[in-house]
Amino acid sequence: MSNIDFEKDQTDVLSQTKDINRLATKVKDLQGLENEITALEERLKNTKRDLAVISEDVIPTMMAEMGLTQLKLMDGSSVDVKTFYGASISIKNREAAYKWLRENDLGDIIKNDVTVSFGMNEDNKAVDYANLAQSQGFQPTQKMKVEPMTLKVLVRERIEKDLEMPRDIFNVFVGNRTKLTRKQ
Image (cartoon, rainbow, N blue to C red):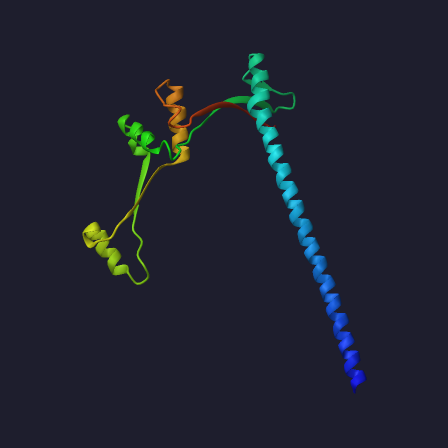
């Protein structure tokens, strides 16, 4: 009987060893894939940086030196240099930016959200609050913001119309970008 138990134990050990080896192989595969993804992400980041340099600096400069804003290629595709605008409101400048927008009749682009959170089974309190607001002792949370795309459009419109737009308060950036349109 002890021989049979010994053989069974040996079989179990061999089976577990095979399972551990298969697991170790899969762990190595996982590590390899994670390393490959990290390398690909780094390569993608570098490629995007190179693309930005060529699109936003090299080609626009070369075309400007040649007096071109558009170039049609023999294959039917075209290269255009377009102005693009960027802007953001930093936390440091938020108060000044909102003040400037309001003083220049542009305050309507400021989103002003007031929210109140209620717990489960507090629907009745939510209804009361909607009707009576702070008189019920609730403290709303207020969040003001300007949507990034809205700000970008505002900046573009004001700059193109030669209207005042405080570049420092709104972190305004104006640059050129190459657009390649391929023949369909």
